[in-house]
Length: 398
Ligand SMILES: Nc1ncnc2c1ncn2[C@@H]1O[C@H](COP(=O)(O)OP(=O)(O)OP(=O)(O)O)[C@@H](O)[C@H]1O
Ligand SMILES: [Mg+2]
Image (cartoon, rainbow, N blue to C red; front, side, top):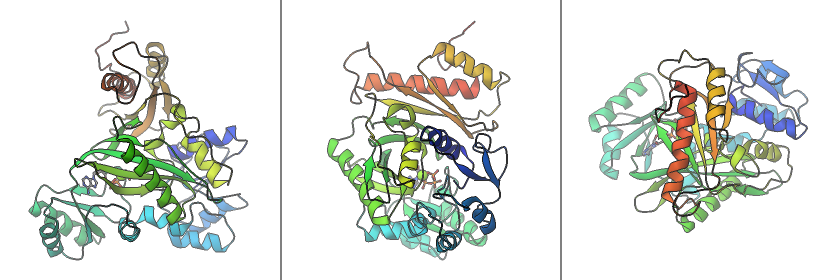
């Protein structure tokens, strides 16, 4: 696996159960996956020789991020390495303009967009769509970096001018007035088998995913089925091998639009580690190894994932002690820590709360707002405790 982050770390966890082992190309021996895998190749994902060293003799090569230059991957393929997803698919997760054009050609629903070559293109685009403008770097963005939701036309022009002056390629999108964000997560094997998990709701704060609710509460069955089918169709049409996340906007009018694609295990699928029969990390491996795919059905009516994001001020209480207290107070919380240093806003772990029996009003169902709210409250409480050493409900264990 190229990249030593938390996705590689959790993929290695799943690999062990399948009797496999991951070799990881990591930048640093302290990277999350480098800490836990015996075979670490140190090097940069932009260095062809480092990639070659990592790929030596492997059954397949896959990724924990999408930033490996496709020309390097094409070279590896030419040298006989099995690369999953293949570079001609991966390009759609690397380059947002290539992705938009391909989705348009496939007839997938997307926001209005445009390439931009000079600042005046902003005015023309805004006049055409009549909506506020979003500026995105075409490559290299993540966790909201490289996305500017412009306040007004002047702000949009200023942002574009700044990027262009720095030689950064950007594109424009209409600002979608979405109700909420969804994610359709699927997997596809080289054999051609596809599998979809239930469509989830994702919650972003400052462009970073903070919470996932699986399945998306109250999602109309035809929208859910349509989103799943879209994910499977895109995986097929693009020739994806492995997990594909299709990030979606659900509009006020009840329409679904594709935001972007990721071809690897994705934050919107972390719930599946504890909440589905087959988790996304195992499924990614099954796909990459061309095994039959696993059952993606949910184990509970609702599972909520809360991301643990580093606090503005790292608490004085050690993480070990925070884990200890959380185990004591919430024995059902499933904790996943990435072995990363704590920095403000950094993803350092996540917690899954798998819905169980429900003593409140109504049934344990994603359509029961009180049931969902109770699970969300508990997931947030657990995640916030791990990052801040503070209980959101003011509870005092002493
Ligand atoms: N066209 C749009 N209209 C409205 N909101 C948008 C639009 N594009 C992006 N956003 C908001 O910005 C967030 C980040 O955008 P996007 O997913 O494109 O960027 P990213 O930084 O590549 O994200 P990721 O971390 O998922 O790779 C989205 O989740 C959404 O909340
Ligand atoms: Mg995104």
